[in-house]
Structures are given as C-alpha cells and as structure tokens.
Length: 178
Image 1 (cartoon, helix red, strand yellow):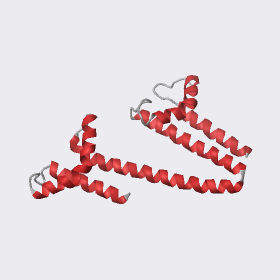
Image 2 (tube, one colour):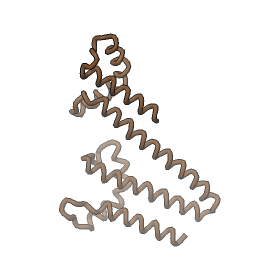
Image 3 (tube, one colour):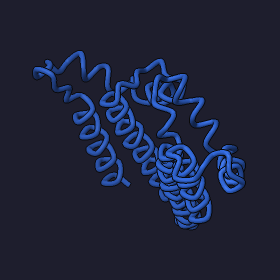
Image 4 (cartoon, helix red, strand yellow):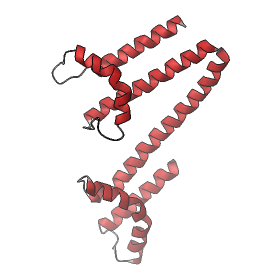
C-alpha cells in the first residue's frame, strides 16, 4: 500500500511540475514526466471534469483517493482477519459461540452502515447513489420506524443515534442470555 501511495505522490508531483511550468512541457524532461504521470492522472482529471471540478488539482485528488482507499482496504482486511480468528474460536466454543459471533458481526456491520449513511448525508450523497443503495437497504428497516416515531429536533436527525443505541442494547441482551 505504501508503494502505491508513493507512486501516486510521484505522479502528482510530476503532473504539478509540468502544469505549473516549473518544467517546460515541451522539453524532453517535461515529456517524460507527462508520459510517466498521465496514465494515473488523466482518469482522475476526466472524472473531475465530468463533476465540474478543477482538473488542475487531479494529482492531489489522486493522492487523497489512494490514501483513503488504502486506509479502507487495510481496515477491511484487518477486520476480515479478526472475524476469521473469531469464527475459529466460536466454532470451538460450540453453537452458543457461533450465535454470539453472528450477533457481533451483524452488530458491527449495521453500526458501520449507519455511520456511512450519516457521513454520506453530511456530504450530500443520497440514497440513490450507486454505492449508498446497499447502506440504505441495510439500515432502512431500523432507522425509518425510529424516524417516524421520533420528532425532529430542528435540523438534527437523532434517529441514527437512537438506532445505534437500540442495536447496542439488543446485542447486550443477547450476550446476557448466552
């Protein structure tokens, strides 16, 4: 992951050097820098143009995107390894251990889905965005009834917080029974 991040930084710096004319774009060095960085920067630049952004900043968006994707990838892989270890321990503990693991994994998935839903709403990403549809599908069954029952507090929507509290209490009850 560090190597991919380093390549993204080098491509961003090379693109920046040529775009700001610190290196002439028509010199052999400028052509080499463009040839070395355009294959990474051009797709980000095209995406920025489609969304109305400034293509000059494409290199830095590439660096930020690679950093965020790397952090998410490392987090997901770490979580999957932990679930694997937990599944092995739960299998040795018998049916109660497996039920406890399923409840714990479901709680964590729903918690993170609610968190992504809240952060997405802050950023203006609605339920019809392609990558948000699964998040809304996972959380609507819990948040929508709470939202209908809980009166709004001005601009604050407390239904996700209440949903997390409900999940936490249900998880605690199930663990107490087991």
